[in-house]
Length: 268
Length: 276
Image 1 (tube, rainbow over the protein chains, first blue to last red):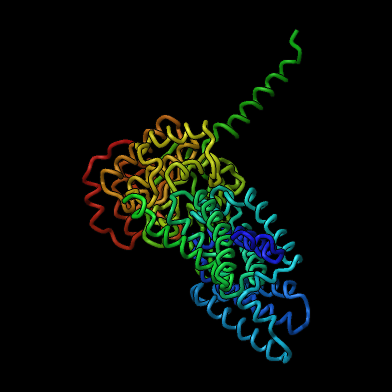
Image 2: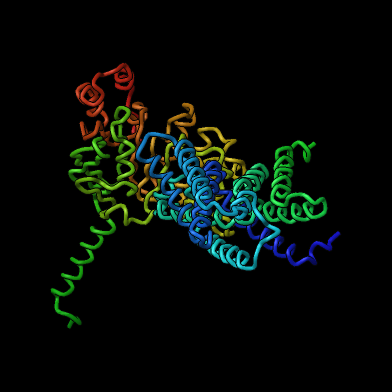
């Protein structure tokens, strides 16, 4: 039953799943509380545009996709600030433009585009050591931000202006958070795929939100749910021969629904 | 034979006197000179001059869009003036320690979906950061602050479950735990019942009497401004009147500020002013 751990590709997948589960469910608490869930989805699709451009230019996808996604996130802010349109509409526009650009880049390439589809649906079982190192580096940066920024991001999430009166540099901190989210999305896209990355950023945090009444506990529970879902999801996908990314999401959703009915179940 | 000639002592005492005036006994808590704030073509405030004496209770009254909350933001140092200057406790408020001002925001700005308990919110009053874990010694102070405003029993309830009045008390505990020299409140009476409002005023008046702190309160409630404030600022993009309540609430000031006198005026002026 546990023989899947002995397979080296599975060990890499497990490590990648745990790391992505940790990073995205940690950042997810800010995404959920700041009502940025659609932003995660929009940026994941922007990353698709970046990956397609990199494939067209025959270069390493990450180095093109990261700046492309950051520019897309700035584009969303720009459209919102220069017009009276809401954030959801700005995201909708940039999202569509990025996907359209991605499709055009891929059509111009005219050669085999299987790589692009790997990015659409993720390829956690084909994770390379280089991807693992990048994800581990991102995890280290994320842990470092926890000690320096968690209390400031949390305060600004609770009340932006109250945080400003306490001399927190909210705008600078937001740029750092949004950049970290954009990088996380690009790195996660390779592993879990564009379609599923938004779920990683939303479902564990949303489940955690239902289980507690403090933001710190929400953060801890979200991280635990993110990591545990990745491990169980991978194990189940191995046992039942199911697509790994989708199985992980279903496990996350299972925990979310348990959280929804938690009070009814455990308080009779 | 003194160690130094007489005049050295004289100048030394003069220096001490000057320092105590400048840093401890500054008679003016908020000094505003020729203040203007513009957002592109929109003028929020223009040509405002104001001196608020230390230890006084000032109510800011004016119609919607008069620049009341903007003025509060300038005093708190979270907005920059386009022209002119603001000094709070003799300094540019942006360089003032957050612990010198106790701020009670409008409760309508609260995101009720955020998972938080009163204990955490009052803790921000001590640390100016959102706390993940609580230190035991600080925890005692937080509990005392919650007790002082009468909501200790709610310390671990979800903020979402609190009524407007209870929430306002929690914010007040957060402000008072800093033992601020200046207490700034933005419409504390909004969304709370009459009894809760009276209780909040009682807490503010008691703190002011004990600490000698100054209070600035934006309000739409003329009655509380009339009864509790030492001075009333009638504001509509600039200063219309700044005077004692009996003078500020005269027809001339009200009609200049609001464009008409309204029926609230007669009701307020008919009551005896009970000194704060």
